[in-house]
Length: 300
Image (cartoon, rainbow, N blue to C red):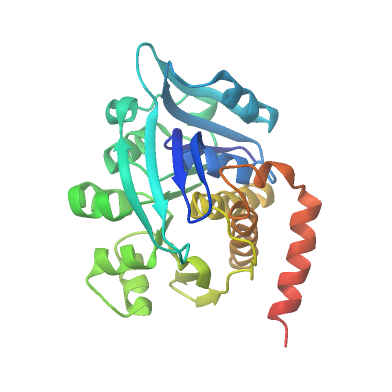
């Protein structure tokens, strides 16, 4: 089934202990879209400036991603982020953020996006996410991502959004910040009680936790030896998860568990190179082979 994503499209500059890359393709909606494209047709809604390289659009289209919802602002500059990863490759510092056209992003969903049965609201302003929800008339599953910035600055809007979505994806520190709970199990359940039917808490190199009214479980990360650039791993995780759900056309408990596993595996490929360089050079067969290894790893 078709899947629509609303979120940021960006140009990133990434510094790691070994290498630096300037003005590479990034953004939450971009990582999500490419990850999800292994499973289902994706429709991207975002905004860029006139400095946006046309080859990036061509890359997205080559993956079968519909970019009719990608707005180009004349005279504008694309959202820019510069970050530096520390030696452990888990912690990072944001050196520069330029919202540019993203600051005034007013999402306009084309008709086919409005009627999409699966919707993901990638990390971005909660106000923007609410505008997208208002335009959706066909979604049977709506899932959102968020971050500490919006928890601190748009708390009221975030609490409203939580009553209008089916699932929320966030990391462990954000779950604790949102609920004021240090125990992650308690925090995950408290987030769910705020509205969504299920909550997925990302734990980076330690995998992810799932919370619903009926079950709680943890899936470990895939043991990746080569970590080059962790940027976009969380967005790729969400893309793999939502893409598989859209492919299956349901979000039953067993489907959700396998979807989370695919999300973890897609993210494990993303971190193996800068930007999308690794992710665009794998196949569905590569994912299936890694899934077999992952399942063997979890059986005992």
